[in-house]
Length: 88
Image (cartoon, rainbow, N blue to C red; front, side):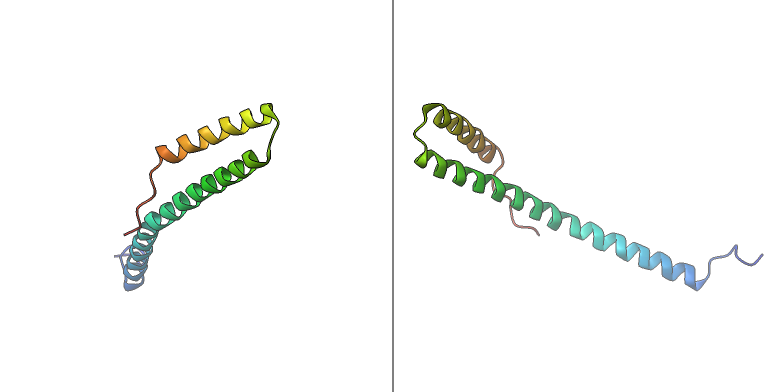
């Protein structure tokens, strides 16, 4: 057989390393997705807290109406996405 056409030990080692790296990346995906979901939900909660704080300070009826609409939308978005379960 001509040199370079067969599989040698270096090729097998590289294949094993590639398979191990792929497995580690696959294991990290659920944790990353969980962290992104937690961060997204936290951002919604912070926005809601800010809007409620502004509602307590605002007397202008037009502004209050806009804030109440925004609060209703945030509450709906929070309700449609239940709290993320902890990763495996």
